[in-house]
Length: 112
Length: 115
Image (tube, rainbow over all chains, first blue to last red; front, side, top):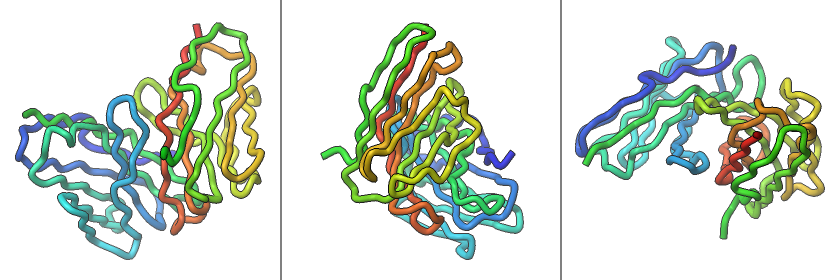
């Protein structure tokens, strides 16, 4: 299966704390993207990191990519209750296919 | 203005019926997708069209038939609905199909319940 795996499956933290989610995948990729899904809504793109990049920042988000370990992490700093959502990684280029392959997601709960 | 809109938002129907879900995007994108999200939140691609041409066709029962009348629209018709078809179906679009253009914009989803 080309499917990515997020870890942990669920994460509960207090407002103001940092949240780290990990994603592993199986074959070489062109890029890796992170998406957020609020309950009952569609997915929203957060950040894209190319295979030749190691780290990327966007506001309170920091993404790292380690292609040798086939893994990525998403760090949300100074979390807020509004960050409560499911977070998915998606990879492109696995097995030579351009389609996005989504992981199973991490459900993040930020308690006020 | 909603970038990717799909209708209906909810669909409750009996087994054996035929139903359609419509999707429209106003982003000027060339590529559109249908995804199925099951009860465990696993999101799997079903189909993709690029400029009205089918480019991705995953292992989906042939009861599912996508149609793209133009590059701004991608509809999904489902024949002979089964209990296992119950899921949330998402439409999405991207600038293009290749990796450096495939940031995807999702609709709000259609929750299909087959009774």
